[in-house]
Length: 534
Image (cartoon, rainbow, N blue to C red):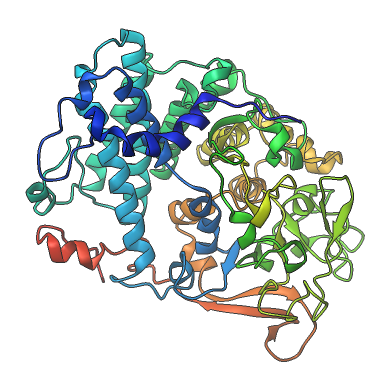
C-alpha cells in the first residue's frame, strides 16, 4: 500500500538542511550568548521552519522504546548505553544517559522559546496560523517540561531564550509551580482554540486540540489529580471522534498509520526521515542484535482468554507446560516467544525458535541472541529498507490510552461502574480479541485499580509509558528490586524456579524516585541544587 507523503514529514526531514543553507539568506538561528538575528524573523517562512524544528526534537524512536528498559517490562544488555544503569539502579550524578535527557529536553525547550519569543515579528501570517504555530510550539515545550519534571522533580523553568550568563545562574523552580504553569499553558491553547481538532491531508501528524487535552490528562494523572482527569478524558471520548483501530497488531503497521486511534505520533517517512530501532530488537535471523528484550515479568502479566491472571488461573485455563496457549492475544502481537512468528512482506511467516541454544535465535546461542529468550514484535516493519531502516511512525498517544486513563481515574475515585467499564476496558479487550464473558464483563468492585493497572501494562507494553506509571503509582521499589527473568529453561543453576536470571536490580525509594541533577550542569551553575540522597 502506497504511503501518503505528508508535508509535515517532508518539512521535518528538510528543516535541518534548509537551516544549514540560510547564511546567504540571513536565516541564522541565534547563538546562546547574544540576541536573535532579527532578519531571520522578517521572513514569512521562518515560522514554519521553526515550528517544524520543534517537532523534530520532540521525541525519537529510541527514546520511546528503550524507556521500558527502565521498568519491569524489558532489559537492555549492553553496558553504558541508553538507560541500562537506570534500569538496574547503578546510575549516578555523572550518568551519561541522564545527562543526555537533560540536554536534549532543554535544547528542545530553547527551540520552542525561539519561536514563541519571536513569532509576533513574522510577517504575512494570518491570526489563525500565528495562533496555531504558537499552540504547537507551546504544546511541545510543555511536553519537554513534563519529561523533565517527572524525572528530576524541581527543574529550571523559563519561557525566554536564555543568555549564556542566565543559563549559568538560573535556579530550580519547585515542581508544584512548574506543574501549575504547564497546566495553565495547555488550558490557554485549549480554551482559546489555538489548535484545530483536525487537519487536512497535507498536515497529517500535527498537534491537535485533542492531543493537548490528552497531554493535560497525562500530567494530571501523574499528579494523582484524578477528579480533574475524568472530565477531560470524557470530553475526548464524547466529542473527539476517535475509535479503536480494528486490529491490535495492525495498529503498528506502516499501511495503517494515521488511523482514527492515533492522537499523536512521531512522523517518519521512508528514505527521507527514518529510524533503525528494529536492529535493536529483532532476532539474528532477521538481521537484528536484540539489544532490547522483553522480560518474563511482562509475559506473566497477560491474562488468560477467560480473564484469569496466570498466577491463580485454574488448571483448565492455564497450563504451565503450554504457557502461551489460551492467553491474551496482545501477548502474541507484542512479544516473540518460542514458536511465534513475524509476518513477512510476501505474506509468509518467519517462525522464531527461542529455545535454549537453538541456532540462530535461541537463548544463549550467541551474543546476538536475546538475553531473555524473548524478542519484540510490536513495531516490526516488514517493509524495511537496507540495514533495517524504517519509516514507520512511532505512536506517542492513542485513544486506548485515553480510555485507560478514564477507567483508572474513575477507579481511583471509586466511580468505575459497569457502564464506564463497558465504555473503556470492555472495548479495549474486545478489540484485542477477547470473547469470553468472564474477561469482558464488569468484575465488580474488588481490585478494580489493580485490574485497570494490569490492563494498562499489557495494552501499552513497550510504548514508553510504563516508567511513568511505576513512578506515579509508587510501586517501583516493589517491581524494580531483585532479579528479573527470562524464559523458562528448567536449569537448576542461574535460574529461579527454572526461569533464567537476567539482571539483579535495585531501587532505593529514598532517592531513586527522582533522578540526580547532572553533575556537569551543577559544575557550571552553582544555583542548581541536588535532589535528596544524591
